[in-house]
Image 1 (tube, rainbow, N blue to C red):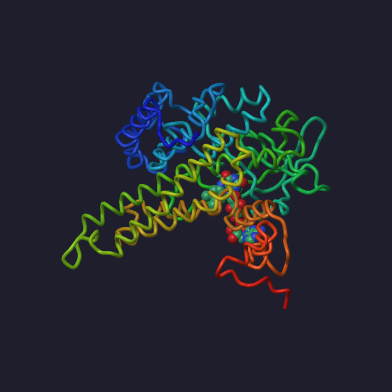
Image 2 (image 1 turned 90 degrees about the horizontal axis):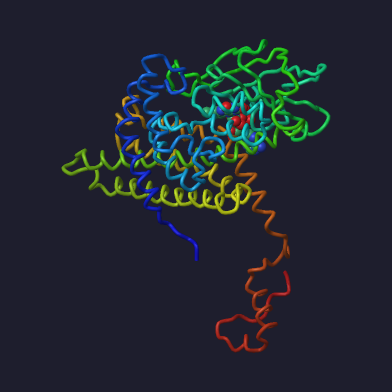
Length: 439
Ligand SMILES: Cc1cc2nc3c(=O)[nH]c(=O)nc-3n(C[C@H](O)[C@H](O)[C@H](O)COP(=O)(O)OP(=O)(O)OC[C@H]3O[C@@H](n4cnc5c(N)ncnc54)[C@H](O)[C@@H]3O)c2cc1C
């Protein structure tokens, strides 16, 4: 019997260290340098940020999502969940620990599909926390349906020439390289006709036309860019993975990334509950505290009853990955992709309500947290599409039966029982007579 919800004492010590370190050293950065996590470090920020990153390295906690062969710790997904739920409480946490999106996913595909030369050139500085990267797939005419993608890469001698527009390329404005998904064979379905390329940011023809921001984000954040690739020439060895395997590369990146978002979201939701409880206990109205009001109690209880099973589901998906590999966790990750925005939105909305008007201002982080919930229902594919994919996968586990009388119809069950136990069935009181023969 191997189910076990306990944490090794050694690892619990690390978690305790992370919790204190994040609370005391990292959370103040969110106030000191708001929205600057992805900006190149100037001298002032470097003086503070670099020593904090070094302390994380000294504790053996840097890049906890990666195996030791890539400079990470090889903790596995369950331990990563326990770390990420703490880091999710802050904006700077993932940066200080070298586990920030979208670089984690980009590092993973570079590790999985990159050649040695590509890993040396792109992965090494990414893992060192010295550069940022961008994944450039969605196009202005649509993201949920790759069938509408038109960005093309055409062979020209030994080179490829990339032409087209991409939208929602997060961090393009600060990235040192882009991973671009382009159509290389328009004559086959897009899932077999797209290829992934590594494009240095300084390549001639890469034009950032605009950068858009989620509502409430700081203007100085790099945001999400509309990028024009204007006959961008890259050599043949810029291809990441094989020709036509662009979606395989993209999908392998997205599965892990979706789970990382879910892990961090546990921390965001827990923070909203902490804030809700503190406010409920502190604020008085009509002669007693908010915490004494039954509807406020319901809001706190409802939030906990949403977060608790969500957290267990994330840990279970992580356990599946550790025990049986990522493929075994696909259905669970799909379900969590749908659940993450729902849980975040519902808990943060309640937290806003309980804080009254203050909750809706920029003086508290709650609207920002709600926005994260909204964004996670879109980023990495919209909820609606994930629901459909999830349902399709689940339906494959079943087969059609009698269109008139379902297998659990009492009449059919009596027939089945009669085959097994004969007339004994008729001796049982309250069992109705035989099945109807049809309308
Ligand atoms: C914060 C954030 C960061 C992002 N970062 C990146 C990034 O770094 N790189 C990148 O390439 N992309 C990125 N994206 C883009 C993201 O992947 C797309 O927004 C997403 O795939 C949806 O595409 P779309 O916005 O074009 O919406 P559309 O494809 O226009 O879909 C709009 C809506 O239509 C509905 N819909 C769509 N298809 C179906 C369907 N088959 N059935 C039922 N309903 C459907 C859904 O409600 C959907 O939300 C990011 C998005 C966000 C919000």
